[in-house]
Amino acid sequence: EVQLLESGGGLVQPGGSLRLSCAASGFTFSSYAVSWVRQAPGKGLEWVSVISGSGGSIYYADSLRGRFTISRDNSKNTLYLQMNSLRAEDTAVYYCAKAGSTSCCNDYFDSWGQGTLVIVSS
Amino acid sequence: EIVMTQSPATLSVSPGERATLSCRASQSVSNNLAWYQQKPGQAPRLLIYGASTRATGIPARFSGSGSGTEFTLTISSLQSEDFAVYYCQQYYSWWTFGQGTKVEIK
Image 1 (cartoon, rainbow over the protein chains, first blue to last red):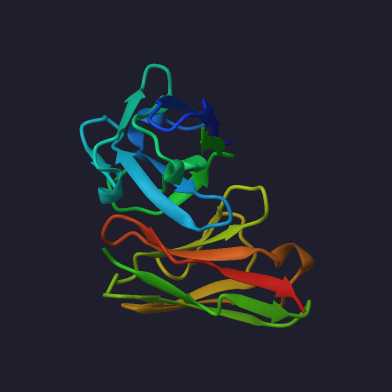
Image 2 (tube, chains in turn blue, orange):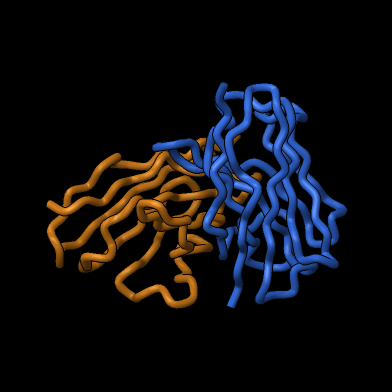
């Protein structure tokens, strides 16, 4: 069974940093692209970033303007999102989501974690 | 960016009735269209991909159709567990989601 477990969320002040993690199990982690998707309170879903299975291809949503960095450690089956210069509008539940096939990077998301809440507030 | 527009925003349906949800893309996405179901406090769950293929374990009462710019999700006979928010997503060019349709009990 595929499992994705996010952690690292919490309360951070504007301008601060946070690193999210997503621990994966139940599939060959290094074979699949994984994305971060966020959802502001009461709002819809917004794709944030994707990294290919090997880590060689990385893409970000234009709105992030270089503040976020995605990475992965295939030896630990873990995905990361380093978030810097955080703003109030980054407040959201952050989900990691697995690609539905081994191709990268235009695929649906067939498995999602339960999410981790990031609150940016003073 | 491809903009996805869902309608209606809210759909009030009685249990056992049919629900039809629409999704329109601002440009063609071929059949690179997925539907997700989200219940309060839960992560989205994949229902449909490739516009019409049900994901593993999804009941047959869920069906998807369409291609290009117009897509439909149909729930043939609503069960109590189907009341939720539904999102369409294009994965033709990066990923964008519709704003969601809330299916509520009438």
